[in-house]
Length: 275
Image (cartoon, rainbow, N blue to C red):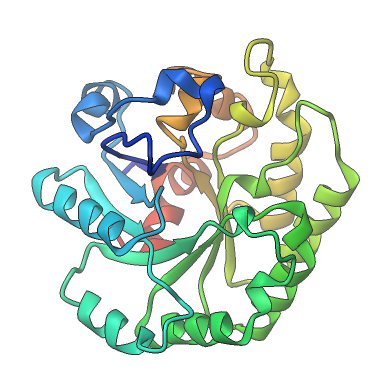
């Protein structure tokens, strides 16, 4: 089964979706599975993991509702307030929805560099571990140190690094990101999505070779058993079509065997998210 492990859906709301700024006009509209399903079929993608884009219980319910209507949604990464005093009760209630595989907080938007090490947040991560849910890491460089500390403190928790931690490809920055990836990959409970790359490069002028050193480093560090594909559709269309998003990743996999390709394009996502 070929899986796109990172897609978003929304009914655009200008008051809510303030992160979609004026330079992102192209995605200031509704995006639903019907907008991408034909392309997925043409490209041999059998299913997707739908990931939250808004931090609310309503967002999680919206994705759950979509999953009852669209079979292509194989798993959901929702949002829950991990710092809530009743987090255990909330997670227990979510057990009624088997397609809900894990949760994500948009930590990259948090100014506190130690957000991931807040005591209440760590209690929430422990609750995820107890209830068998995954956690997707969406971070900014200021969170590198606390990310490493959080992961080290939770060796039984399954963590997924989104977008390869968003390397600054356009600016050509390397060392801080590369050192972080090397350190994070030492933890065997962390997987990594090769996703959202084009939007970290020059939106109008990227070349496939721009991504090569970054993807190669992530593969070298995480190994071919803990790395997988995600498109970040529809955000990706700011810089690359869905087809281009597939192609630019495919170009980085020349030395993968047939079995390794099968793992990258679906097996690793299936294993991590228990799809």
